[in-house]
Length: 483
Image (tube, helix red, strand yellow):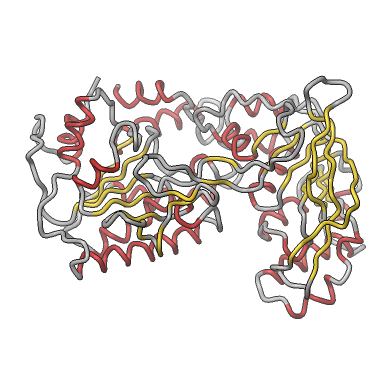
């Protein structure tokens, strides 16, 4: 097994040797924890604006890119093109990727504070919010996040085993993740075969009996959180019709003139799909065997057991809601006191994510699931910052994360230049971290090691006419990296 300190030497082309813990590096030494979009974007900014800075990116998995790899839908390869930009950043001689290293386990926050001038936490929001309603422990009530991980190759989610023998699925939530899982459930299997969806998911979906997916939200069409691209894909999907309840659109068309773009375009498309008898996609819907059904003004109140499969969900009790106040994107919602039951054999919760403190020294708001911070500065920890969903909560798409990360980068750049962060005293950075990791027997993964994994996945995919077949097992990733 190659150990961390050896990899440290190899990564920079230095002679093969173990580095002394007393070694120190000149210039600002910056540590980023989390190799997703937020981590790479803040790194990109810092190496561009601080020509003498070195940035080490630590990632708990052996592979980089976070939600771009594990969260983007397999049929959206164009969204993953941002990986090309991240790769250029990782190949910068002042950037080091260190995979298979966990904060709080392999390295502590206190150790990173001692080794680096600045520590940036960007490890994301990786856990699910729950509803806390009766029946939530019934089988086949799953998180949409884990379902996405199941078909995207997230280590740990491969054994999710959703039961797809039901004809009806309820997705709770109306954001892009909710729309992604609905699309994957309803897409023709031949459409999915040419993507990088995992082999186990492809096999299960090829046997799926799902014919109907309900997308349930407690507010109305004006407040829907998905984007127009994802909606248009659903409206035009081969063999699938979209079914709307026209009463949900009362007053929407009258409200449209006061709506700002791009919300106006999205709402116009929704209204057209629901109300226009001449919509362009209606002809294709005539022979559709599957249906996509956005349901508005409904909130889950309880899960009900199946009468035929003991311990498994069979229906949802929905509270009927209504909006109050003047019509807007941010209207409040309240229950009317009415309820209705809808049958379903699988429920996917897509109601948001939350972060967790990876290290006990991280000040954390457990209720909101974010690091306690002020505009990216972590409370009570000078020189420690947070960005991305860990600092803001799970909001927006990759472009929003990019803006947040660049803003954080400018903040850190300013703190270094004005002396708020004293970067004049040398810090050892990874030179000492490598020794700590080596003493613990941690096998680290460099970016060149990741490129071996990447090539192996592409080779496996090419053999079966796919862009890649992802390696899911961490131990197998490490074996390929060390080969």
